[in-house]
Length: 146
Image 1 (cartoon, one colour):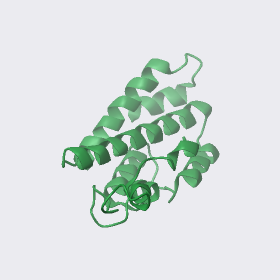
Image 2 (cartoon, rainbow, N blue to C red):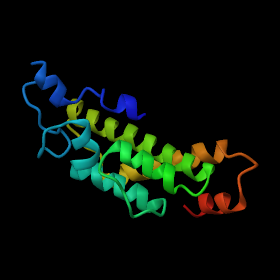
Image 3 (cartoon, rainbow, N blue to C red):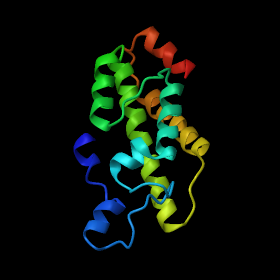
Image 4 (spheres, one colour):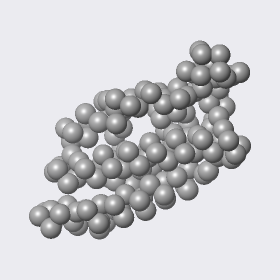
């Protein structure tokens, strides 16, 4: 995920290629749209990320993708716990990209609440279907509580 993260077709890249007339973030309209801005500087992306991490029981976040992934690797309690966190981040990236595309093509930005609820529903659905019977009771209880 981290490798392809910087390959998103954001306005800053298109602007440099003279394909776009402006490089403003279509979601917040206040900064130059880049992957870093969209996920870590944009008020929309930041609020979504903070709420998803809070839902999973974390207040700590990082300010770029690689440190965030390393932080999960280091502080995830178990393999199952880490995989749930990775799933949530991947799902969040997908939904923020989808919101960005909606802002560009439909001139509509979904609410932060809508994005967070979609991430919660999809993560719980995926993890519940894929969780191994070998997962610890602690991991199963944690998943049931989120």
